[in-house]
Length: 548
Image (tube, rainbow, N blue to C red; front, top):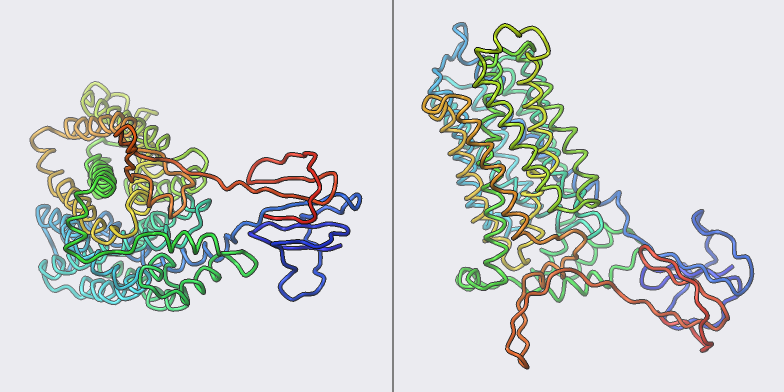
């Protein structure tokens, strides 16, 4: 029994002769036949199996690098359990409701500054940026724990937000650029997943810890982020852009597995255009191939913020208390974090199955209807007063849970991965700064204005406003956002590139992906030809070799 590897295709035959374009196993010895290869029934059967890149090293790279997302996610969840503790009369540091809104809002304002710094930071390396940012993140947690007045909290939360703004895009780019095309959707959810793990961890710990102890707890969560990135490779796309080819090849081997042929992927990375200077990049943003993906990414990110998620998460306890929910608000807060985490796990499996557009449309529709339903509950609150204590008392919690589930399955993960899905490699640094600034400015506006909107429009009016924004995003996604599921890094480069037909002067935009055609010529009467999803048997003429 002979076994050969060529171009990520495994060939097995009872008695193959000379093979052109194929090589024996790496050690030159007869290998043990893997379990997935059945025995040959006769000497004319050729079994062909395409090799796939290993998932485990890509998964570990994403999880360990995104540990800093977990610590930063805790900063997002800190305000929800900490604000009631800070406003308690017996607290060592007592703050007012207005000061509390600034504490929650300054995280978003700091993230705005961090979003603008993302471009220069990730130009130093995606992994390196995540590693270095763990130090100020730890310092901010300690500053909160030792706060002597509210200004300590302001400064610390601004630092937390700055770190958050850098981490969000740097981690998303690292995962998108290290993941293979068939796993990019699922692995692209890991940054959001780790953020949600941090939020849930902070919610759970906040049920027992006061604001000081919770801050020390957050600092402890950050410490592993100082070590994990050291053992991981840098993004191959970044290394190729820096013309560090030897490390790029080593990183691809580490991420894809020793037996996987990285030649095709490496060649695609070489064809990706290198990043120009800052002035050229700013001028290049006016080109169709850069402006349109930048506009779409910024619009979806702004939409994900103005749907009101940050305000609802920060003021979950306030909303539930106003609703006179029959469920304890602290328990409901922990359930909210758990639901958000589970929904993000579900999104990991759905993004590569259903695609981005379907999830976005379904997510926004469900979110909008949930907020409208919650608003109607508050509007008819007086009429429902006599039904409290029954199932009606659960309606606010259910509406919030459905809203968070829909957001975590569609809008939240997709708005995060678009920077690595739509924007070409050479524009990603500056695009990250621009779209990050748009995203976090929107989040700051939503978080800071929630209490003001509630006083002007009442709670039901504010929820109706957020719900209408969710529903408005549906036609935008349907008509303007292309599907990017399964497109390779080079496919992303040409996704919005306009090509002009000089014969008829018509300009058209190429979208989509092409598949490789594999042709086998076999010195036998029968062969099996396999691609990613189809197996065919055919009678083939008899040249003297196999060529792939």
